[in-house]
Length: 519
Image (cartoon, rainbow, N blue to C red; front, side, top):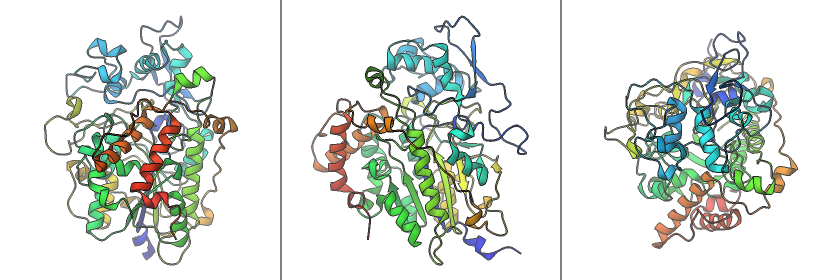
């Protein structure tokens, strides 16, 4: 007999979204061949990419997928914008001058194939990484340095993520929505659109022009509860900046910190939808590959351990839900935790991204993209007592499945766009007739960051690309509301000055974040 409580297994949805990792990069070695019925990973497969002609290694002309030997590879950060992804997926550079051009000087068709039905080859990751490496460090990499873009993490390198994936459900065909970087993909997560944009920059673009309706507004109209919680070190929520035109009325009372999330989980007062942001500034907890490579090389500093901090954050969120036992309100039995990554970030994946319906109008967006092609696979894990251990979800899911699930669960009305209209719903994953008691859930221990990682925080290093984008969007928000020019240029400020600007903006616009824990 089915436990009637299963009907309430999705009373609360919690989504924690990390940064810039592909499925193969983090979970490709999750299962050994034959360990489960079906799993599209890298173990037991012969997967490789060719070396580009400019690399003379004196040996084989291909590099193979292999286990990562250290944390926080690849270093430096790969290319993640639309033209870079085109090269990674199709091994194509068009026009040839794009091979050595920075992103703001690349020319149409931005490495995209002329044939809209072109089949992705998934063999351009090394070629694109070589060119990005040269852009960042001013020299060509060695063969060993080239190969790190195909390094994939064994289970023991990411024990929390891997432990949850094996103990509950892993999706081996979850795709991000756009073959590009952070802002467009995070916009699709809640709006099923990026207003035609495929790049984060220039600063202020999303804050000023992204007017796509969001699922937050649908929840609000249906009188359903929602909240965005951010790592306190993040200072300003990226979700608010990306959707500022839509979410400004909710800045004061719908944004707070992960300290509040832990308190709310403990007290059984989680909203029906919670969205969690890691810290995308140093000290990163977002699992983003390392940035500021040239600066770190100059001072002989190791890469920051964003992977270890991300694992710590994931363990905290999981434990907050696992130990939530209030008889009413939110608790372990009625809360689904979904762990996602916004985009693949240039890291290797072997599964070709599928075609998808454009979100709406047929006119082309930024860089001529028609939005008829998906982004790449990303790690995705669902944690619920109504899911059996060892579940592998082979069906196609994508970021807009979050919108579809919220719309269906709380009857929020029609789709936002054609993209969430076809996305799969998460509810059918809750298949058990009785819940698994939290005493049987795994207790997971993350790898701890080193003291060397903490020491890097004292340096006033340049901002990484993502940090510049976040600061630029925040400064644009402030300038728009004050009717003046932005207070600083995000391309020139260092970390310390950036944190000062963000703290000022936090105080002015996000009192729920600035004020610390709610009472």
